[in-house]
Amino acid sequence: MTTCIGMIGAGTVGGGVYEIIMNRLKSSSATITKICVRDANKPRDFQIDSSITQVVTDVSSILNDDSIDLVVEVAGGTTFAKDAVFAALKGGKSVVTANKALIAEYLDEIVKLVDEVNADKSKKAVKFGYEASVCGGIPIIHTLQSAYKGDIINEVSGICNGTTNFMLGKMEDGADYDDVLKEAQDLGFAEADPTADVAGHDVRAKIAILAKLAFGITVPIDTIPCIGITEISVVDFAYAKSMGCTIKLVGTAVRQSEFGEHDGALSVYVSPKLVPLNHLLASATGCGNAVAVDSSNLGTASFTGPGAGRYATANSVAADTMRVVNDTCPSSPFPMLSSSIDIDNDFVSAFYIRISFQDGLGIIRSVGDLAESQGVSIHSILQQPITDRMAADTVVTTEACKYSQVKALCELIEKEDFALSAPVFFPMISDY
Image (cartoon, rainbow, N blue to C red):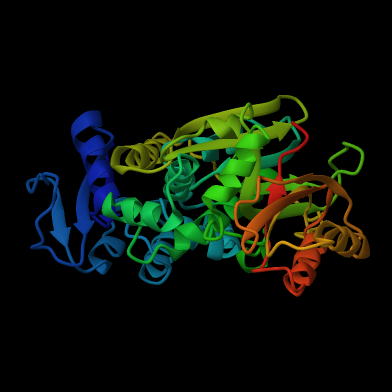
């Protein structure tokens, strides 16, 4: 029996999905019979077999077609796409999507809808696949769904945005932020409005999805602390190099642990991190992605690969599609459910703080006094040779403390007469 597929969207990823399913797999068990696009006359960069596949502009021609069993959504966005995905599920059609923003924003509603539709045992169960929504071609979703059932996950952290990883890599080589951003835009890695990437919003959506998978709890994305890369400079990379580290934008979901027991509240956050060069996350270069999962049974397992691109992302969509077709897709998109874990996004870490200042007497003493007032213990003070006493930088690293403590400390430092700007601060991986 052939599963008929209706695909919504025919852009970069959609074209890759069509080519993989129709040309490479050439499976008698699945075929794309309709593609919904805004403009049917727009030239495509892939060949559509018109004898098999009909191009339509009205999504209802897919949603109301009883011959279509599966809807693949690769249009993106959270308005039209949401309506189409929800209507498909309500209509008894399985869904495969690459839409991380949609899933992160409507996560609980999606789970509830799938459960409601599948409560009618007289009808075929719907499935919801979303492998391509996080880290493109890395099969991290399926891994977390199936490979950790007898394990306890302590932490999931990842480089989940190829654009910012590319930019930070260039900055590590000495390029300025503005020049790197323009290069990323010229190469098509970054959008004209790069906010979703550089402000960390893209990673925030992805780590919310991974947190739900790993810990069974929904963390509203608007409660997740999110620090982007816009304030990072080549100065930070110079200090990082002197410490044997690099800087990566990392999404983290971790159970807090006072004595290594990992049974505390769940903290989820996005921030640049100072990463030791021998840490597995440091190995992700260019537009590559990497995810590290720390668990009771396995210790730390790593997953690396391309985080974006036509065929990398399309491969994950096609894999989900065939899992639905072959009835091996999980019945619940988020198998683990937990109501016993508290959420505390005031996370604990050692921190890196860069202070830009006009040189003078007593600056380090003043910083120490302010740190003491906030209960922050200083671990080290780093100082590159001062070449301009009117505009210099120093770095303070801290012992483990709360995000709120360091934020308050930096707000106090900014008010000091010697401070030229708000200090740049972000967490460090210091226990590796």
